[in-house]
Image 1 (cartoon, rainbow, N blue to C red):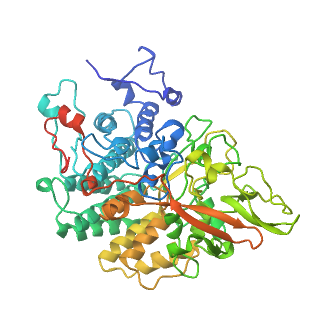
Image 2 (image 1 turned 90 degrees about the vertical axis):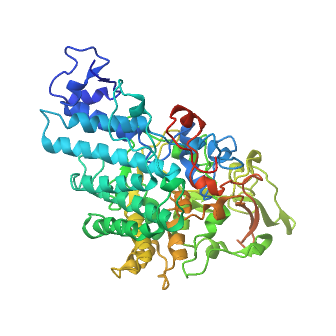
Image 3 (image 1 turned 90 degrees about the horizontal axis):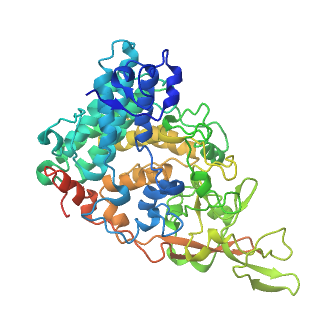
Length: 594
């Protein structure tokens, strides 16, 4: 019996020269037609892209868009009932599997294998078209393997679509080693970079540069595991430490090809540093920094709800303020004069005054662009985060302190509220943190409407930081590490050059530049410092009091997770495949510690 394929992309048929349904039922399409029709092939490839998890969007109203950033200790979701809070804190990741972190996309991998095999046999489509679409399927397949190897180490490498008559030996596949999976990703990207075009024929599709960028990222991860990890399960997990330099070299070479020959540059359209960094993630025109994006269009039916959930309360949208940022995240952003952003915790006593012009206004422009802080300007008015205000009452000239009163206006002020919106500081015991994530929030999204804003998956700044990290461990062989670190990344941000580029400095810069982009969690794991940084660690919220008379703020530091903590023991550097998968496939070997 011939295989059949079900599609939801019926509109793609409009681009076909003939009606492929002329002699067939209208709900199925024969493979003889699919792989001889550009419209259907494009629909197939689009389906592969749509299935792949380029960034996390699961959950009702896409509330898991904050999950990986929450795990990395950057911000969390508003309430404990949301998995991006509830599954991150007080939750053991045990032999039952990786919970929401789990990812086992062999269905999508099989579909990619089907296209790769069947399309190669096309007799009517142009050879260049066939080669390009096959290369795109290989890109998606490699991405899926990268997502798995980050979680589990070695996984089965399946590069053929098995038929319904496959034997048990064919169906039950053993795990390949972690090294074999990373080598597969690297070699696949080498192969398809020579096939894919410099510019895609449609937005959101892989190019030569996207393939090289994935190689840059994946080979850096492999090098980190070799350098910082240990081999286990007879080599199924980890690499020989002696392999690290070779992987750093492969990552650096891929990055260098993009930096030297790619059509990209850091986004610098607006001379105002803060506004420029805001616009970077919202500009869908000619954005010179974007290497690979996931496209969204509300009217076309593909959209997300980040603005719905993330916009500050009081600025539209019935559900809002969903991504409170930790005090520790704020402290990672240094000051523009080079002073450290990390303060003595003793100053957070509720009595020490902070001048907002210094404490906020002279902090790294990336902080001001990507985090809502007290009195941030948004949509033409300030966002407030203070729980109460100290002021002199003009009626009796007495110093008074407001309570958490909704709607109370400081007497004699021009509408200054005695306290912020409850969802920003004290709502319903859900423990907001006194700061909110701003990166990716689009102020032009209509109230109540889901978002059309594209999501940048890979951008040039990441490739530069990949290059710097790899070059650092290789001894800066090209002598240009400082150029990309200082003259590109930090200069664009409005931050001073660093004379001594150390491992700590490189890691700090990644955590700042790539904040809230689903990098920090995976970086902590590949550097093998996630246990130190996350396991049983307390993250804090900021409780702000405003002195209306002086304009200063007082800050009290309190527990930011309702008394909960993250759990990241050593075994979680490789998550469990899970009891169900082990039961289904007797050839799978479980990871250590489960």
